[in-house]
Image 1 (cartoon, helix red, strand yellow):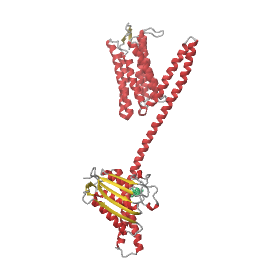
Image 2 (cartoon, rainbow, N blue to C red):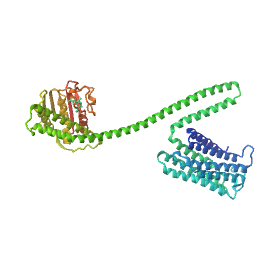
Image 3 (cartoon, rainbow, N blue to C red):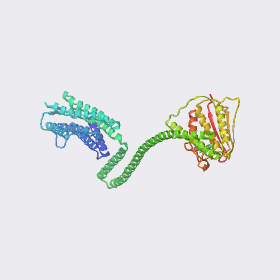
Image 4 (cartoon, protein in one colour):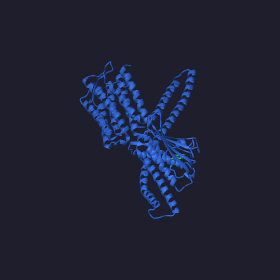
Length: 543
Ligand code: ADP
């Protein structure tokens, strides 16, 4: 066998496998079926070339007829490529009009008739020992060239136009097709049809071998979308080949001993082949399910994100709407308490005081809601400036002390104190209002969660880095080890909190943490356990 024959055989085996692979992947799809046919007629074309060169064909030994068969068969891939370009990819295809198909079929039949029945296309063949037989073309050979160029040209133009309509993977797929056809068609046209005009016959089998490039590109493009399915088909394909191979061995053995051996082997391979295919199918199914789940999850995630955004929007709008009436309630309660509407009895005063305190609390909670929606939407604004933490903390402590002392509720015996080094400088770069909010929240919590005893606010400097450390210590209900990790999370509240502390939202510490984070500081809590008091710390970078 010469090199050309070997390459032709290889190309045929390759093309046949690819055609089968693509067809088996999806037997119901028209595009896959047409691809299978295309691959099949390309294989026929390759075989026709081998026969023509080797000059062996049962019964027929007339080289002229063999060359005519070769050229007739060569017109088939051209025709099917033309059809295929319309069908692939199926979703985008404008189905060819029946007139187009009819004309294409008439063109094909005419050209085959002209080749086989007349000497207009091929007139004679001069045999060569080199197997590169010389085909003498007829006067109307250009009609054949014209046929090939029009059909392939139409296919290429159609693909090119389709590429423009597609996007994503399909666009890429069609692009591979386009390149494959272009390369292969150019090679075939040049070496098989044009060079022979100039009496160069050595390369007239290049076209057949080059189809390997085209089908390779196409197979890759088709499989690219569903790589998993290919695994099943490949496993089936190789197992099948193995079965055929062993079956042939079994049937061709002569001695009994060998027959028994091969028979046993056949049974063994059949069983294990089936098991192999089953396991591959199972694995592929599982992976496909995972892929499907992943897509669903992605979708659910997206939906959750949208819901989360909607929630933030809602919080922000609702809070703004609640604020205005609340300001009025608080304002009027305060005016009544101050006696702007005349003298009121002690019982009325205590009732209005409760209205005032509750609305005050509500204002804070709504403030937290607003802060959270700002934090989550990333629109929290900070005005950094020099801030004296000592002045701020002392002022706040005094305010709380005054509120407790003036409160009508005398059941709480609480001592509030403030302590800081007189000589130290506690200046930091921070947003005054936000830090005030944090510290106020911490002191408020300590008072809220301490039925009796003390709340100590103190300021110090950390020796290693000079940072300002604010500590709020109380002798209150303490924090259990179970609550601790959730303390600074959204809605993180101690589960065991009795109804006496029902008016908390569990948002204050979360907001505080976000604010301190924006200041590049630290906030944390310590407690020996329930009933053993708590310590809250805020560390701020010194300027
Ligand atoms: P709220 O106080 O509105 O519930 P916070 O975010 O301010 O929300 O506090 C979250 C939780 O942390 C509280 O519900 C409480 O369980 C716990 N906590 C906060 N401060 C203290 C404290 N000083 N002592 C004991 N527990 C506290």
